[in-house]
Length: 603
Image 1 (tube, rainbow, N blue to C red):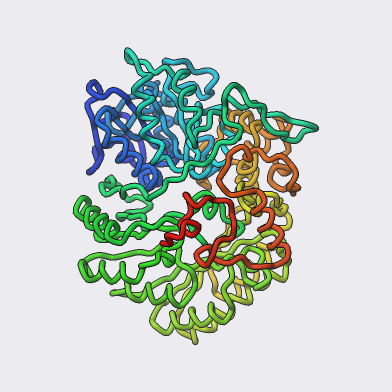
Image 2: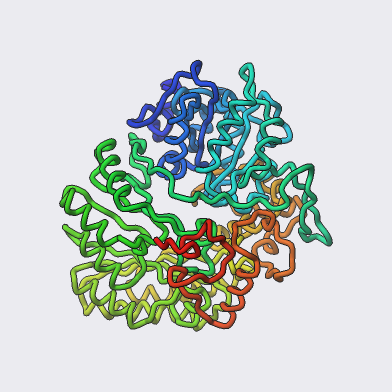
């Protein structure tokens, strides 16, 4: 047990901190040469469900000389207990303080977890600022989908992995082994050696410049790469088939098998569609073997076939038929991220063997005008015929996700969401159905065609919220929406430069923690931190940038050309659609060695 009973008896969910779960790996500390600890900076139930952390954990522990452990963000009750008893945050496997490890790897998936990172490091006995660490402190490495603009947190990391780490890991292993002598890692020598590798970003080798209050590019220090090219795995890595079985219910309490990575649809607001390009599919025999192994190693009776767009897997019908033929009704299959069309409904019908409850789809926009702007087009007739078919086949609920505040959106487009939902409601033909709406505020993300767009002001978003809330309340439609203050923070942190490191540090020192949780998020702390640092929170979130302005993330090369993103921005302004990449190359900038469409291999 990693903490004494006097501590665990005073926290709400002690199983978050005890370790010892089925499929976890506890190696002998003294017989492993390199010690690593991985974290997703949120509470256990969320972090233990993260597939990237699970894949890295299994991959690293397959190396004989590496011992890889885990740590997650503690809840407020344990934070209080650790401080009161002067105890460190420790790993789940060997119960070692984080300061004892050679490497701390943090997978960052959401900007509002930034202060959690500082809390984890601090409680683990590690100076939060990289400049204050010595060779006696661990090397802190960042990765994950929020590291494609890591500038707001570079002060807290020694290194980032930009892109997919699978092909990079062997070189990192070799260098770690080489530079660990007499129990100590020579971090300076290690960082110098790996700085030339694709996908490795050492922020201390880049000096940010500013002019008239605007970011103005970088000065390169030493032999650093002028641009760090995203690491792209040529093939999907092995599927992790020994997921850790938590003692408490996790967010995703089922097995997961990644069937493909990337998306060809080209939604212009979607950061994931860029940073996970190109599409790579796992061969169907490998998927089947992974499903078998996951069930064998866990006892789960549900498996999720994971992809950004599961219905686009080229052999999805055959895959579902084979799974059903082998497992029958003993295994439940879930398909996340389906498009709202009749083929998706057919797939779901093929899976449904019991009571039909709810379907979930994301139209994102309510009018053809907005669908053309964002390049996510489905005709109104197709949407309504799909909903009518679903209700006629016994589905009783429908959850639809929409986004407001998109570039070019007018109040007529917001009203179009209401009109569309009314029409969908009518297709139920007075059956007892329930429609729920999830409403997100648009956040401009780096490396997308909308990276230059500004977020709508809180006043404009609130007006749009009011229109939807007032009308949906009369329709017996349940509406959930994102608070505008949270969206402002996400936008500012997403688009920020290095000056935000001071903001994040100050907000953390003043009590910002667990900001993804409504009961913990304190917007005033963040506003005060921006003001004290002399920076404009709303400018970071809402400024519309021109395409010739320097952007804080442009030295990180996703393989997608700036010319392509500008072309997509212009096509958006003109309401022009861009075809699915599977139907022909759109010239995004990827090479024939990277993209199966260009190589002629297909999927």
